[in-house]
Image (cartoon, rainbow, N blue to C red; front, top):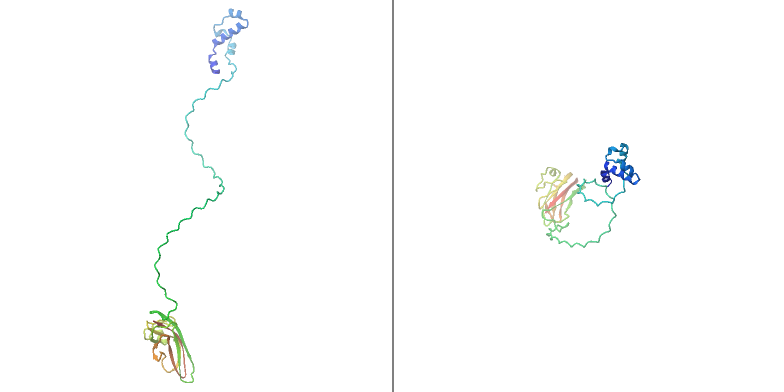
Length: 246
């Protein structure tokens, strides 16, 4: 509004205003005698004072709001803020329903029967072993010693028995297929092999031999005996191992 007043206030308007002021103040005579028809008739300093803007008027009433402008483009995303503090632990939820039992698996096949630790007789093809020893020195008279060879598990039948002295044991030169050693005695099926570790013999009556129930070179179901015959003043000292296979 102030700008509108300033645009309408010209030099001509100023002259008219001045004439009105003189008329109202009793200067009608002067106005009738001095007619101002041009701004050139006014002193420049007076004219400059007339052109000066007056004091600002009071503010006008608030105008109506203008229409909203168009939305600007979306700004870039801001940086991620710091992680917040952990929240308090929530209450424990109710227990869920119990699950249903699974379907039982198929029944496995029955396993083979195992062998017991003890049997009435030694199973066919199985081998058992043991040790033996004899010690006879300076017999005052001729004599015979019997060294027992007992089977822990009886055999189902009797069979052949073979004695190998120390040399035959080392060279495996004995008969009957006895090819084991003192520390690892073996025997073919249905036979008893007697191995010698060390021996010191003098004045023997005969070569030591296995005997059972008066049968030389045999064993019975429970075992056999190893027979040593010594002359007067003779000696027999020997030891070894044995093996029998059913």
